[in-house]
Image (cartoon, rainbow, N blue to C red; front, top):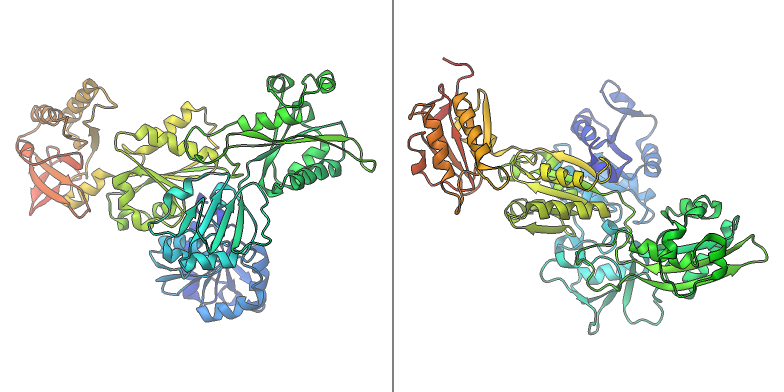
Length: 621
């Protein structure tokens, strides 16, 4: 199954008529959804049958799935789910598709359940129109209740409804960010009403902090997001009870007004890697455990070293040193955290003992600069085709819409603008910075984001996919983390050929005339071989402002082996608004304006022009 819909699994689809089931069947194959139909439709393939009433079955699916997709009248769906609705933070996403497949409606749990996003993804699969009615979407803003999800932030307490209403009403909303990535701030639409730092009479406030801020006696509504930046260093006697360790962590957080849900993970000495109490806490709260050798811990300067601890385990500090080691691991090398404090020890070691519990424990807390996302990053290498959205595959469109971040050359980013959604990170780098694009994409994916790297044409043919995989290999990539998936597209030679006829009906090859990555001597050898072997040849990157001689050399080489009247197609910006098509000959094609947006197609000895169409026979005459 594609990675595109993994965040919505398990996913159920419901149909009650043969036409509705047929509409949902290909969608279920693409999304991994289970298609449920009544027993009367048992003759259909790839379906699951439900018995009894649909109302009872929907109640069963409600508890078992993260999203429900109905191909049913909207009114009927409303009546079915009305008794089941409890809270938007826990209800599954509900989507309705009309039987003609023209509209995809986000009906319930649009933000936290992901129905808005799922509706957009399904619409791309079907070529339909998504219907989203949330105010945040209309304003081009991410929902405030899903703002921190890509970064692994945890939702704290607050009046989420009032703050959302203030945003929808265009009121001033103060944002105080004390921790976590500020990437989201750089991608807000113009005219937003967020005010960062000091704000005069805001209507609402958003805290982004590891601290648990009190909401008492405040004149404005507020909500809290907690980036997972706290690393808890633990030292304990062998066999210390899980209850004592957990109590120590909770009391320390309370004493220093830290949110427990802002904890990123636990750190300790390696000889405690099998300590049952620590392992149980990590398992139950889904926290990573990082362990360090006594030698590494000894190298860290701490405020309260202990000679007794040093004599016992070979290092004067466990809790403090482990917490500091944890936050120094994998810190960001970019400037996505300009307002955050430098990594530091927030809480020096606290010692806990109890007459009712076994053992003793020390706790220290350090704050990292980069938050822990708790997610496995993904790299989606996407071919956008020649430029028009209808030339992109549904899977490629869905990948762009689903990604947390999109990276590419600015021209290609602009071409896919209608696919983008509020809250996405968009980074456009110049055409000469392909390596930097690949490295940035890998950096974000290793952190835990889903990153779409877009290339025109096919990502694996003169695109970014090869460079990204090369950089991953250089990083010692294990082939699994981050996950990688390629989404192919119509490449330039296919697009160009389709605009002028059938020039590629026999053996063909593609050669780039750019010598930035390939020595010109090698390119010349390939031109000689292709010309002599009578391949139909597509020339990529034929000419730039500073590189003008190569295309003339290519013409000279081909004229050695082919007739001057050999048909040549000059195709510029295929399928784009400024498309230019010219059919000419090998002898005269340099008379036509050629640039980096041009693809040159040189026919073989059998290629001919007929009624302004370029035709290469399937066999030699």
